[in-house]
Amino acid sequence: MKLRSLAGKLNSSKQSARRKRQRNSAPLLHPPSGYELVYELPLPGPMDRKLNLLYLAILAPASIAYAALVLRVRPDYLQRSRKHIAVEASVSLLATRYPLYAVHEGLHAVVLWAYTRERPEVSLHGVGSYAYAAAPKWWFPRRQYLVVGLTPLATLTPLLLALLPIIPRWLLSALGWMVLRNVAGSHVDIYVAWQLLRHSPETYLNDDTRRFTLWEPQDFPPPR
Picture 1 (cartoon, helix red, strand yellow):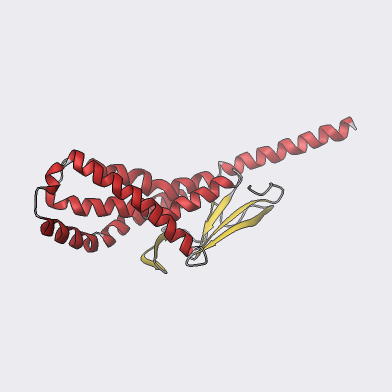
Picture 2 (picture 1 turned 90 degrees about the horizontal axis):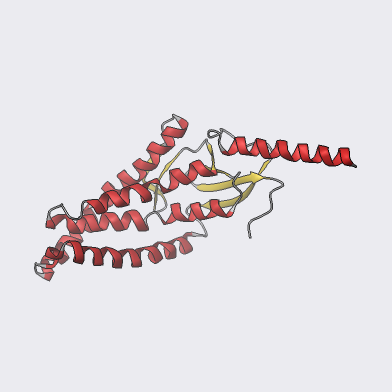
């Protein structure tokens, strides 16, 4: 019995060491051995409505926070006619869409390239209403894909906000739309990150541009 117990502990230790190596390894061209599909998010798909609600749930407080920040840092923004502000905001809404998408997806692409050393696929029109940057043939460890997914939110947002005190007044509306689009437009990234954190640290993710799939060890208990 003692020998069996010792053998079991050694086997468990080997599996733990193997998984630890996998967590720190580079992306793979296939799911790791002994892994199974545990979650799938097709885009577009049945989750679109919930993701749209998540977008609005992020957009509303972000808009209020940005407006409060502008009033505090740039009170000169309101020292014009309402018509002038409305026209400026409307033009900026249309003019900033694709430039922001290009920068946002470009940041995803840079991190994907840093991990794979291959040119990722990038589309500003996307699948359905989603723009994307993806490396479809690669499976990423959880920690690496968290970096891929959250880089635009974590880096571009503070960089844009840092421009608030110094840019000309007529660009404040454009800056606002870019900040809000970057924050609320990260809703899919945030949702995928949440799913990754719900699953095991050994989880791998693949994004084939039409769906995200999560893979984890067959013997790992399902998330609550």
